[in-house]
Length: 122
Image (cartoon, rainbow, N blue to C red):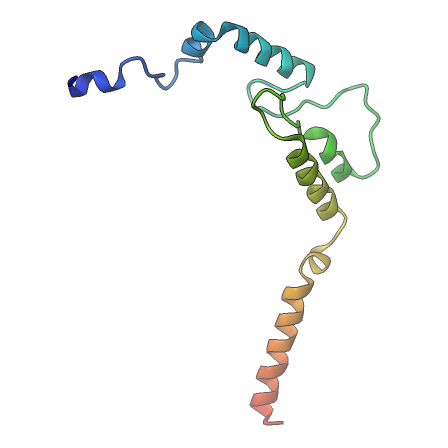
């Protein structure tokens, strides 16, 4: 049995900047950087940088579908999940608070009516 000091040997330490990953999987690292460049992902923030040549839409929230990357296809995110998430974001863009909380508002009105009816003993 090895000692307790050998438990963390070879693990990636915080702040190594990805050196161990680059050494062990150089081809995958190059592929990741290539994918990020193709999809205009900022490596510092992970946010997709908008294409300066793309037309600007009238609804700022409608661009949510273009901003979310679907994954690299190599063990990355599922394209279906990205479509569903993007559609959910696009659906939430156009409504106001009341439109997004109809059930909550209906329950609040019903509760208020019940309280007032009991106070007035109708």
